[in-house]
Length: 211
Figure 1: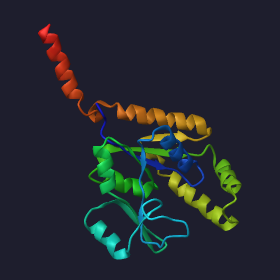
Figure 2 (figure 1 turned 180 degrees about the vertical axis):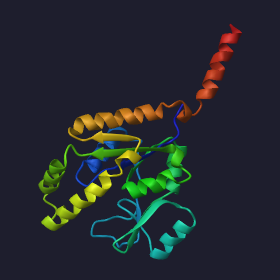
Figure 3 (figure 1 turned 60 degrees about the horizontal axis):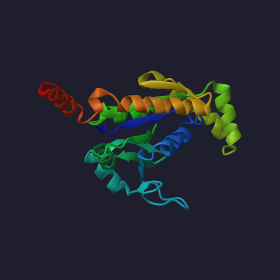
Figure 4 (figure 1 turned 90 degrees about the vertical axis):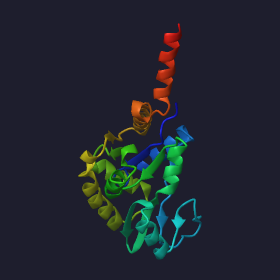
């Protein structure tokens, strides 16, 4: 009685732990797949097509959007990014869940798509804004200007928390990972997502009548 594959949306402000949690979930369950985005920006050194991104031309990207083959898409600094639909549909048929690392706007588009009924959306909050800023500084990757920009964007992201099915406060990474595992387990066991459950019950009742 496999379940129909889920579309698991993970959103959070930058630095709240979303990417780390996604990696941990995939280490926990190897059947989980990560949605690889398509983009029109050129590959950076070391990036591999089909592994880091699906690199496309602007014309190819627009054709995919026009053909309804993008679950969500957006333009960022002159380049297009989006989540291809076909790999997700294939994973669903195989009973595999797909994790999306998208912002609230991407999440809205996926929920509004034809596959929206299979979405489980999770927003990850930091325990506090000072702690979020501390984490951004600890990474040592960004300038003061970039950190200030990320903090301003974080407030806008957090304002959409109520649009999500689940909201977790990532104070302790291990505890938050456990909560994510529990959410996935529960969602997979929902009656309407368990393929073959109706046939199993029908056979069960038939056995009772034979006795």
